[in-house]
Image (tube, rainbow, N blue to C red; front, side, top):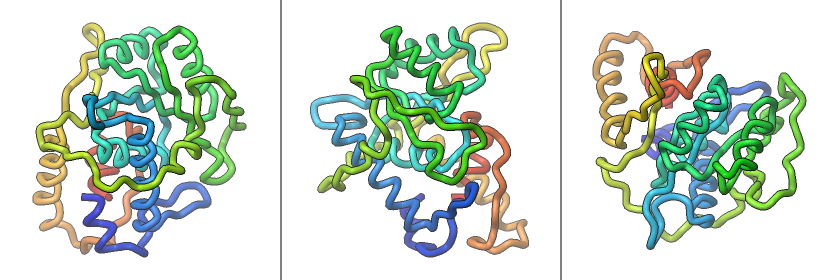
Length: 240
């Protein structure tokens, strides 16, 4: 889906965030570099290993969009973690999903909590994205500690593109979307690549014939959290 959008609209704006704007070409390149970095670090669907799970502990930002397309291209399973989760909920989701890798941002309270989870032995690898990359952040960013198992996202994305990408089946799990846990512990709904693609196709068939806006001319404002399925599917993916 993303490759098709990049091919059709390479120089049109794909994302606008703070004082930065990314074209589809730039978004596609960032996704490629992230996916290549994961594969180089042997995260994803790599030879001799299964599909790794990677926890996304992020606020809405371009890092989320780049990370989602990049991780799924590498064949990894994304585990949705909410910044609003209590520590016990984060522990449960990490243990239940088997995610030993986490992508987060260098802002409070996300980075301190991620480091606490790593110190407790719940995370092996912590990838830290620079929130200041997109312009002045609303809160001061934190330094990335020089510790084993902690890496800045910029280091990861220096990898070269692989000769070929992992073969992804429609039935491969792309996303573990956890329930709110209002009647018990959160449960991970297993969403395959086919599930997510079908959801987008359904919305496309329903909305586009009724919309006066031509494809390519629409602009979407995402005010909802992308760690919830509604914003992820009906806002971010549909707008991509």
